[in-house]
Image 1 (spheres, helix red, strand yellow):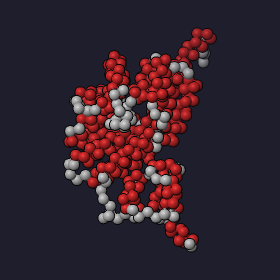
Image 2 (cartoon, helix red, strand yellow):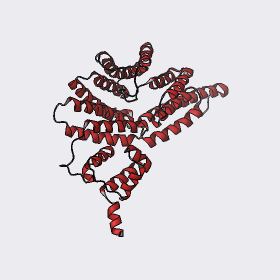
Image 3 (cartoon, helix red, strand yellow):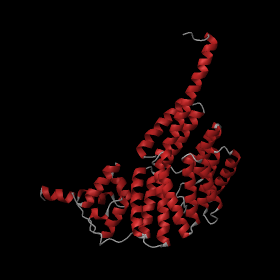
Image 4 (cartoon, helix red, strand yellow):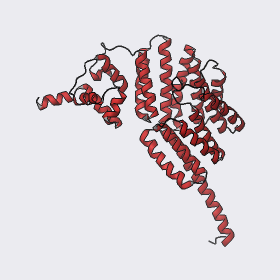
Length: 374
């Protein structure tokens, strides 16, 4: 085969899309093959151009999972069909998996692409497709909250508002509960605690048919809001209920897709007791959380940032600061910007401590040596 023929073969649309995707997200061939549920040898043949793929359904599946325009893989618009429910579910599952392994920017691009496809596809009030749209909005809001800072909470809030609208349209209490819960959480994140509590209490009180995972997740976040509002008794009461409900959730069927479990409740307790100044309880709960949560990169970073906060506030400043630096590096690498907010909190606390120590030191120096003469 001539050099020119080899070049054309390796420049096939599929080869280009696969290579670009791997380069953009710094993935190995093994990682991408696993994402696409194919053998790594097959991926290598695609990428090198040794194998040309002509199955339109398979090309459409690949385009969907890579967030690529089907036309880029040589599929004419007139020849590919709309996404099936199974295909939509496959993308939703894949994006949640990306979140679990902290591939946040990749997850964001894929869910944005899916939403574009769904909004184009849904032209009637088909309850099944509207349910999938609501689930995609839930995921889009969650992903956006992971990759943005607190002052950008409005980006996620917009998705959750639309999720609320769709959920009311199809009268689905579970999805409505999730929408109201995260609307409340975003208001709290943006600093409007009372408005956040209003939404979180509405999620608890106005969605009687919501499943246990949605209800428990909402109650856990309500506990967080109560703590921020200084309502300590209310915090203790609802967190006890959140812990009780978490043991009733089937992880394989959870409407929160792994974001609510005994481990997340323990982590919430750990951070909460850090802020309340009970470092022994904080560390005990963080230990329990680490043992309960799946050993994924997402939970690893979550626990690490929580430990950094607890160590610094507990007086182990050097150890806490070292852990905080590790956390910053991982947050930046994986796009978990929301968790960096915790480290900003650590820095703010240290700045406050430094000022206080400086003032106390100045008072002692003056008592020992007298006023400084100028």
